[in-house]
Image (cartoon, rainbow, N blue to C red):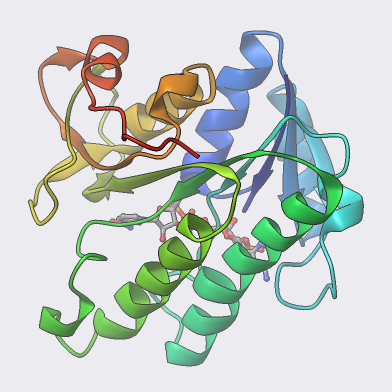
Length: 220
Ligand SMILES: NC(=O)c1ccc[n+]([C@@H]2O[C@H](COP(=O)([O-])OP(=O)(O)OC[C@H]3O[C@@H](n4cnc5c(N)ncnc54)[C@H](OP(=O)(O)O)[C@@H]3O)[C@@H](O)[C@H]2O)c1
């Protein structure tokens, strides 16, 4: 598969790109800083230069992919405006490019808490509002989407075991290694299409956990 990961130099994205390249996929990472290219090449990924906020369209980068993954984020140091331009605007722009170029598969890295941004504190609310709106937009398209909502990301080593749930509103940590492994598995499991699920560290092997997710009645 040819997979384009937006936010290609992010901590989850680099782990995902390494897994994809390692299993023989064409792993392309969208980055805005040319100095990050060498880090992608080192793990067998293909750097693609593009900016989620400033490029008018991402179509030239998306064209030819079998799937896209949104793993970018404005980050904790950014204000509400960049939550809207990256976490919302970037995700929407990626979906629009996928639609325009006929790429059907879209995997979104969302967040726990996106089911109810209103109950979040002032610091988290703009981020969760952006995530909620991005997810809603993607779910409203005819793309083959999966929305993955990880808990608090850690840099602990992955275990290959997780807890997933389509009942939203839970809390807990999850290693970035395991988020990346789940994303790689999701890309290889069409049964996850049309599913929104939360993801935490746990004790169920990843493919078993994903296989047990309930398929929606009307998968899109
Ligand atoms: N932190 C948590 O606990 C948590 C929990 C749940 C979900 N998440 C979500 O999980 C995802 C991955 O997290 P992470 O820790 O791997 O993120 P990260 O390391 O902060 O990576 C985010 C990436 O987005 C890129 N980016 C920002 N603006 C961009 C733009 N205009 N154009 C292109 N790329 C741009 C950044 O590139 P630059 O280096 O160029 O800025 C960076 O490489 C994010 O969507 C995050 O919101 C996080």
